[in-house]
Image (cartoon, rainbow, N blue to C red; front, side, top):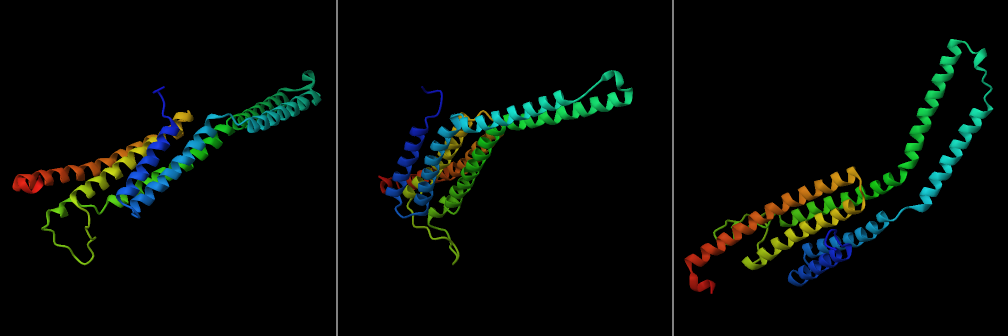
Length: 242
């Protein structure tokens, strides 16, 4: 029961996070990004179901093409009038060379046809994973200017400096929401690796996991700075923090 990710529960977790962000920071850019992540999670759940099911229509088409190819090849061989007694060494070499080339080409064509379903699913999975990789960078952009050191009150702003309107608690929650979104982005990506036993897809999923972990690590460094600032403020004025 707990040996695989449940797409339904993953989607519910993303939807709950979207509501939490919307309630805490209504009409914010982060809430819109999380709503987009929720939409991607919904699409991922549908795609995961599609990946887990065999494509019988495509398999039937491939089987028909293979059957026709083998039939044409068999008919061609049967129609050949070969009398090995009348062939010299040069002719025999040419016949064998042509036969080997045909076998190699037909084998490559059969391999292409047999693996076409896996390649179609791989292509769709990589496109979806590219969306997740992009939205991870979008999440990182939203926390980029959230500098906790500016809460000390002694910062000197320039006309181009971003305006700081968040309190200590709000900034902590904002950064924590970004970290949760990055973690869920990695979990949505893992749904594809769970349904597709494909080395290329697994490699792409691992890259997203590494990316989201690295981005989340930067966010938690900011959260740790916030907690240190809060501890310093309590030490300076214990009554003011009660």
